Image (cartoon, rainbow, N blue to C red):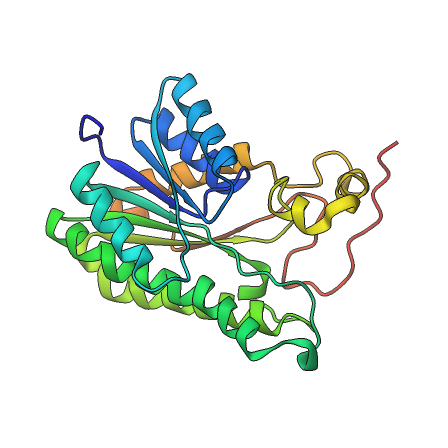
Length: 263
């Protein structure tokens, strides 16, 4: 139980973007509610770090693919903790590069359920109370795949492309009612040990070394971008932006990035 501070809800709170953005909002006076699928110890560590820094936070495990789970979380937070003033939808749906014949129907559908349908469900559950209160903010982490499909990315690109269009549709309907939806395209690698690091496994350290100095997005620095988006006045709302390290070519450029000499 909290003192009814405004709540910052994170759906997809790992040690990368989700956890760092939660810490930034807690620093700014919000009660952070961190939801993630698994790893209770990791979740407790994120909550403990926020509290040690003087903020307030709550952690909960959430299977976002389960029917009713997101809806129950929103209802519980609003009832027991406080009004959700801002939320971050940060769920990933990357299943790795898979050729079409190696992408089972269930795997393709799961990507959509997490990346696109999950966002719809969060907005569907959360926006009525925001509208009644006169406004709110929904920040949505996205990926290069929302802008450009690549070979082997059938599930991810379809899910993220749907996520982007959903954000545009939500803005078209709810901006006039005071709700700001911001679609953040992460067009580069994030220094996140329990997401990208877990995917790469034993190659993680070598991959980081190959990216060179400042060659990966620092989630603690990136958190300031999310914080800025949530503080924008209504006459200067950003609805979409993309971020990348200086070493990376932007998503619209098909040329390979230049070799970086880190010596």
